[in-house]
Image (tube, rainbow, N blue to C red):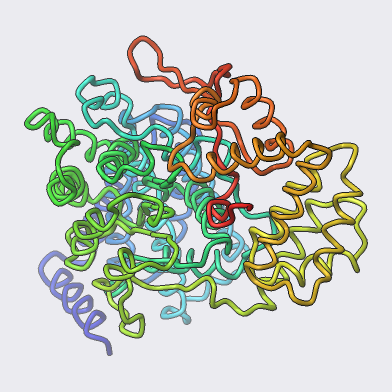
Length: 574
């Protein structure tokens, strides 16, 4: 006999001796009725939930008559009533319509559990008293299923309450963070996700890391890859997947082309600002930090991490409202941020020392000592103090080419399977090669087929491989762009494109004209021609409203020009 059964029988026998059977039965009846009353009253505020709970109470009444283990039945009902009472206390918190949705979802789960139980009762699965042990297990399973439904509803509501940051974000003190408005994943048209059905294995592997919740699960993940391997598109897709699961707590996409996205002082304040949008407690604590030190956004990352991340996150963990949720911060293209080692020097030790438990960080970058010296850790040792490493350029070539094939089939119309395969082979493991082909071929309504033929001819060159292949592709595009120009015009075009790809920041046509000694009109016309060839893109101006809070995109006459991809500065035509 189990210890639990022996204890229950001892209590039963003692009560029987002291009170007698009738008095004992009266106490049991009163206890059960009290629990059922609490259970019903705790659902009075919601008609749909009340109806579901009435069904549960009716089933419990039936079970009471069919089981010999009344003591367990009373205890399980009391536990359920306590959970229902606790949950009812949350009904007026948070957004009323969203909280109402969770209560109605709970009602559906209770109905489902009750329906399964009643089917068993109707089929006499629980009517034979000779099967008391099996009946007890069935009843325990039923009550535990109900309790799990109440617990899950409570977790969802607490999570929702924690994420209601409306009041915090209205405070002017938050503007002191001076965060980068263009860094989040959902700002700007250049941050595009993977084509559906591609990079699936890689995305699933990273999402498996996200879902790991064991005590030794790694809190950091570094995806390293050579230029053109598709790091940023994968990062964008992950952001969308995390967002869909309400796990994206913040993102920062570094960019050498955008000043505020390559300034290392902006990374931590921008992440902190997004965490304040994600968690009420984080925002409330952050607000107090900023009241104490309004210049903290200008200080070095070591100080920023401590005050803007660690201190507010400690307050979040104490609430327990993120139980079952592990939010993730995504920081893409570390190598495009100046002095990024200063940020890593502060944030990686915080991850290793578990100073932000329950908050995960995903980093992406090209290989480089200024990044790898902080993140490249022996990945064979798995614990929460390590940053897991994944090398994108080491993925098996056949897997990469399968994805490139899907990408090209999705983007290019009226292209034969044989032609697609030629382009796949010439792309090697470089998604940027395939993406450049797509931009070049689809960038015109008139010459698309001719451009495709030119690319196919180039792609069949047996000597073209790796970056040599993409450089030759750029060369072909540039040659076509300057076809028919006189020598002086060609030289001026080359000067302009040299200037654009050589500068560290986007430059306006006016500045270009001054640098190369030509008119603004010539510079503008040349830039527009390069844009049509998908070599240069134009960055539009950003205008803030009177309070400096809401950014709206406006088209300006003197737009800023920058290369389509960072490979261009490595390839300057001569």
